[in-house]
Structures are given as structure tokens and as C-alpha cells.
Length: 307
Ligand code: BDR
Ligand code: CA
Image (tube, rainbow, N blue to C red):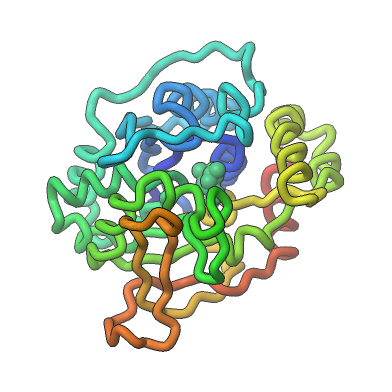
């Protein structure tokens, strides 16, 4: 079985990704940690509880950073709604069972228990893992790998022309992670903007357990996708990263040296990929450049519709 820890800033697509974690044969979810990102830490914790309760996944939940390492928080309420999940599950009570241990203390401790065995998947800004690295850099050698949703190597951005949201929010954290020596797989906009779910896909879930949650949570996301990008579908950023982390073979990766900009007016948060090896550095990231989007969406709908 694959041991997984998921670090989320539970907005809409994080929530859609969490739905993949229940009832997966050969996947052992050790814990879920939460970070400020799309929305405040408190709201993200609340949403994480509600989604895990919905799917009956009883794993410990850890609170992490309530702001980026050095910058101000930057929320995306226009994309994810005031509550972060488009108003879905608003009448479900929030029964707080957050652990006392912080997200970074948990990561440091649990990697001592299972050295070399844990896959950490990051679907928000990288602040929590960066704080763990600051406290104990050797954690990089106790993780099997880190799979992260963030960045783009095709010159694309979704917050600014150059930067993807998770990188833009905490580029200092991303820099620490990129240079930590941990084996990294990058699921960036290069592939997630191709991993599109349609309204027909959602409607095909009618009659299954999570249909009304998915329909309610994604309504605002479909609207924003249309308003901003003239797209009828929504990008399944975080679900693709989680699918890859649990071992699904939907992307093809290539090794590159990747760094992130932290000191530019125009390009803060941009991931820069050394395609031509001009810097002569050892590749530090397995960059996903191709995705079988159809196979991914089919598998996603099949899994979440199986209850
Ligand atoms: C990423 O930013 C957030 O809005 C999403 O949850 C995803 O993690 C996409 O750029
Ligand atoms: Ca996210």
C-alpha cells in the first residue's frame, strides 16, 4: 500500500480531489494537513472536516500556517466563494477534531515513523512543508516523494500572466521546497488546464452519493471558468495531482531544473524551467508535460460515482 499525506487549502478543486481518497485499494491516507491559500486557514480547516466527513474518511487533520512565510495572504473568493467551497455543505455542522500538533511537527514526526515510505501531496501554497524543512531539513531525505500542484513550464499563469496561484501566494516557500533535495513531481497548469470536467460529466453522477455536493460546489467554478477563460469546463487542478500521487498513470514527466522567481514586479511566483540546461544544474523536478485527460476524467467520474 502507498502511504499518503495530503496538504490542502480546501477550496473547490481541493475538495474534489479529497473525494478521490476514500475507498482506494492500496492507498493508506495517514493524515491531512491544512494551509491558508484559496481562503483563510480556518475556513480551509472547516471545509476539510466537512468533506472528509462526507466521504467517511476518518484520518487525523492538522492545522498549518495561517499565512505565507513572508508575504500577506491572498485569497481567491471570486473563484471559490466566500466559504471556499461555493456554499456547498453550508448546513452541515462543523465538528472540530483538529489535532493539537501542528502540520509541520506532524510531518517531521511521521516521516521518522515511516522513513522513505511517504508520498506527500501539496495542493495549496507550500508553506507547511517549507516550515517543516526550515525546522528539520533532513525531512527531505525521509520522504519518498512530494507531488505538488503548482506552477507551469509553458510560460502560463493564472493569477498573473506569469504565475500560477499556489506559487504566487508563497514563492519563498516554493523556493525552499524546490531546493530541498526531495524527489519532486510537478503537476502544473501545463497539464491541469487540460484536465477539464464538463457539466455533462457532473450530471452523469446524478443518483450517486456525492452528486449534490459536486454540483453545488462547482456551480461558481463553472461560472468563473466561463467569465475568465470562455471555457465551458472546469480545470481539475488538485484532483489530477492527487490522482498522480496515489499512483494513477495519467501523466508523463520529464526531469528538469526548475526554480521560482521571488524578486520581480512582473514575474513573482513564476516557475522557470531550464529546458536547454543553460545553468548546468542537476534536474530537481519531474515535470508533468503530457496528460491523458480523457482517461483521468473517466477514472475520476467512475471513482466518485461508485458510491
Ligand atoms: C491552484 O490554485 C487554487 O485556486 C486551486 O485550488 C489549485 O490548487 C490552481 O492554480
Ligand atoms: Ca488548492
